[in-house]
Length: 212
Image (tube, rainbow, N blue to C red; front, side, top):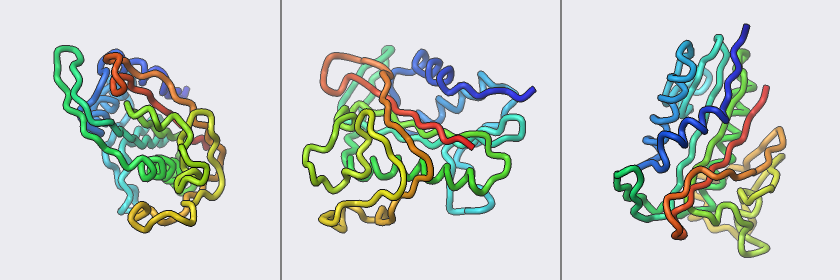
């Protein structure tokens, strides 16, 4: 009997273990560790390069019952210093919100590509954790350059997504191509952790599932 992969269980275990991460690599390592612990018979590979595209690096590839479950991660923080579980975390200020929104949707596009290339694809996930709560809100300007890529709460993303015509070359450098999504993906943010009552003390997370 084939096993089911429970991403909600994984995130619940992750929240119990870690309230905050030093970096995206730290996040990647911890969630991979929990996946392997909960599903001991699975293969878990980091930065996996598929044979059909050696320039692609899948953040985490889970192989369960010979089926692929690719997972792409984003961890973008607002600069601050936090104390959690008797440990000090000096978090970087990543900024570049427009590009980070684009890159998250590109992660979804990447997993859709994997789905179309791999016959043993089971399902895939994209996960974004942040303490920059403006990601949950609509752009301030109606004609915002990244409106098509906004990850605001309850928005849906599908089809061809492009930068606004007034977007500068610097803003979209190395992110010029359109994002094309075959399915519909809703952005629903969930509580991850609360460290303190400051404007950098609440962490939220977003998950999107890519199905076969």
